[in-house]
Length: 442
Ligand SMILES: Cc1ncc(COP(=O)(O)O)c(C=O)c1O
Image (cartoon, rainbow, N blue to C red):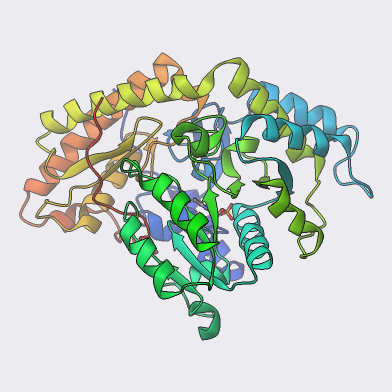
């Protein structure tokens, strides 16, 4: 039995140093201190290998965050790293386009149903923003309907509680509707008849699509002359090699891919119907690093391996096992009314139970704190990589959960469970995805 992880001395030293020059001490909200119980969590990584991450204090974790989902094969995957190294010896960013761009565009086009044409970006935000600009150019309309999370740009973030800095005129152009509510989308399209350029939606996040929901959006957008844009930044190269559009058989006009397509290298793609993508010739979407070759080489190697080793079905099987085992452990710890397994086996989530009497912030903070103490680094979801399929990783994970859940259960039974936190609780940035999805079935 290993001792709980309690030493975060170097994390604390680096945190204090970072705060002097880096607002939030991180480049990404979801990786910043606000997501962790301060003083009882690592904030800085030193290295990773496979499914494991070592922090700057030398503590080792099985990582279920995996860089917020891009690392689909595992840290330092030998095949991807070899592709990067080979390309590195030839050069990184050139003065001209390269054949690699054509090869990757052809590869995406062969895999993804709507992808007649393809352009590349670096972040998911590049891809969703390019898609929205194309839609506005193609329709001559300004308004956008959104559902899910789509990045940090004005047209999206202005519709959330984090709208500070977004002009009011821009905020007025974006409307949100709840997932699986085609009637709400229809009402907005009717109320803004002839003015909606596109409906942008994560085709699936933690809630599976209700029967007919995605097809209803397809029909509604076609009828209203608006484009349907699938934000496949998460579903892409996870739910299916052809994305959610392949998995659910509904083809959008445009789609955005990113995250898992490069196993951690910064690359995204806007793909779509030829006649619509042609607007790329008239709008402005252009960047110095759009054709950066290390990421493109990494993406080709990642997709090759995902296909060759049939990785995605294996990850879904792993998800089914994890869900089954964790459900048993929750019941054994008497926590099945405190936490709820949600989502689908390709991307399961573990959220505070909506019917629990405990504050969700307390539940999340306690669970995150005790998982870390037992060597599991995790947010609200199981972000698998191929490296997690190793049996040792699964058995260590389940043992860590068993111990962590026991401590959480004891804490919740105590007079003041908040006192069991060894630092400040987490502070969620905002919530954009439905949190009351149905429980997973095996
Ligand atoms: C569904 C979805 N769309 C868009 C984005 C934005 O991608 P990025 O953070 O790479 O800009 C994200 C990021 O988490 C996402 O999950």
